[in-house]
Image (cartoon, rainbow, N blue to C red):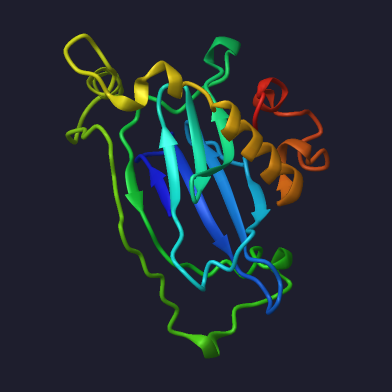
Length: 207
C-alpha cells in the first residue's frame, strides 16, 4: 500500500509487506519519499501473522508529522523539521494505491529467497477501507493544495488539532516498544550506506 503524488519530485509514503520463509516472522517495510528522494527505509518484524486475519494499517498525515500505524500502534513517525531546513511532504496532493509486485531480487533475506511461483495466483484482500482526507481537484498547484487543505476560521480539519501535532505519551511508549522489540533495520543506523548521518535522523525525536 502506498500514498503518492505524481511527477519526478513526487512525495510518497510506503507500506510494503516483504516475503518470508516458512516459520519466519512477516516483515513490513516503510519508506518516505520527499521531493522525489527516498532511501528512508525502516523494517520491522510483525508481532502477529498477517495472513491469519485482517488487521488495520494506517497512515496519519498532517502538516506536522507522518505516522505509520499497525492496529493503532505507531510503528514510525516522520516529523516536520522544516525549521531545521529539512524538506517535509506537505503541499502535493496524493493518491492511494495498492499492488502486488515481485521484489525477490532484494525483499526476502536480501534476495536470497526467491518467489515460489507454484503458489500463484497471489491475492491481497482488503475490507473496511477508509479515507478521511481533504479532496483536491486535479490539476491543482502545490500552493493551492496546501491552502485548500489547511484549517482556517471557516473550516476545521480534525487532523490539524494541536493535540495531534505529536504522539501522546501512550503512543510514544508504544513506538519505543516497537523499536526496541521488532525493528530489524533503520536507515538512520546504516553507516555503511550513509557514512554521513541523514539530517532528519540527527534531529528526529522519533524515527
